[in-house]
Amino acid sequence: MMAQKRLTLEGSIVISVGLFGHSGDQEVWDGMDEGTFTKTKEMLDDMHKRKIDMADEIFVINVGGYIGDSTRSEIDYAIKHGKKVRYLED
Image 1 (tube, rainbow, N blue to C red):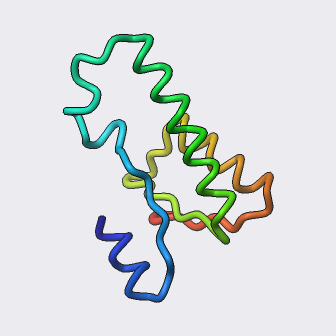
Image 2 (cartoon, rainbow, N blue to C red; image 1 turned 135 degrees about the vertical axis):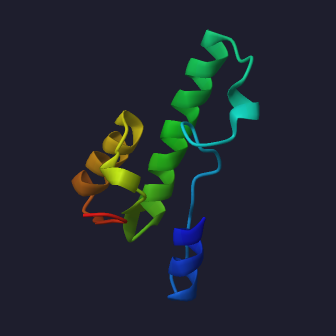
Image 3 (cartoon, rainbow, N blue to C red; image 1 turned 90 degrees about the vertical axis):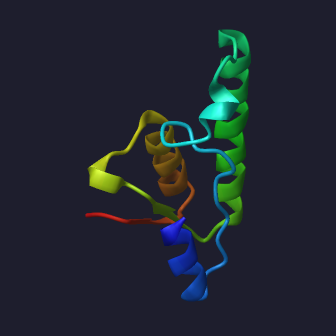
């Protein structure tokens, strides 16, 4: 959220994720059966790529250098589609 605020104050239009998998929104994921979880994750992955289609660049929140599989897939997608990629941490 801090990065979103900073980017907004710098004049960027921020299109962010709606849910966070590994670092929040646990109430969404708790108790979800495997089939629903898989379907929801696939839908969110596709939605993130549609947001990348609308963007000029993506800004990766890679705290501690961590980049998960879904984020790696989104980075690859962005690069393939000629989008600039910036990172919170080098």
